[in-house]
Image (cartoon, rainbow, N blue to C red; front, side, top):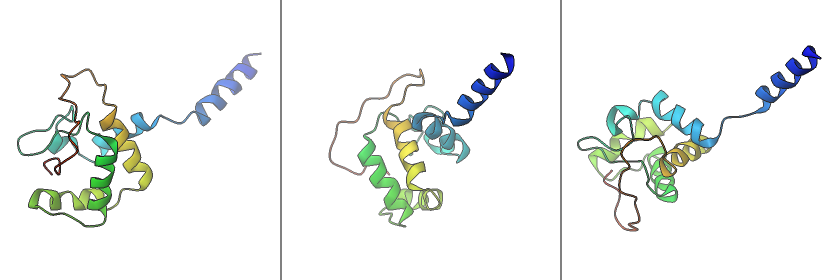
Length: 119
């Protein structure tokens, strides 16, 4: 019986993939995004907040950076960080930002449909 339970739990753990949110959170810190955008993705200094931003907007920005498209000096700084991101990683990161729930002081939710988001 113990062997069956151990095998069952191991199988579940093996096939239980982390959520897109958890993958995005992990990538945020692994890729060093927090160095400029802050530990709580709320921005710091001249770098924009990413928490609570709209997912389609952020996806478009990251895919643009990955395609080496940057219109300002700050946005051009993002190109080396985004160039190696896969579509799956971009989806995970933008899920993390748009569904942010890390218990910090919430940033103002982004409902603006104009502008470049400051980056």
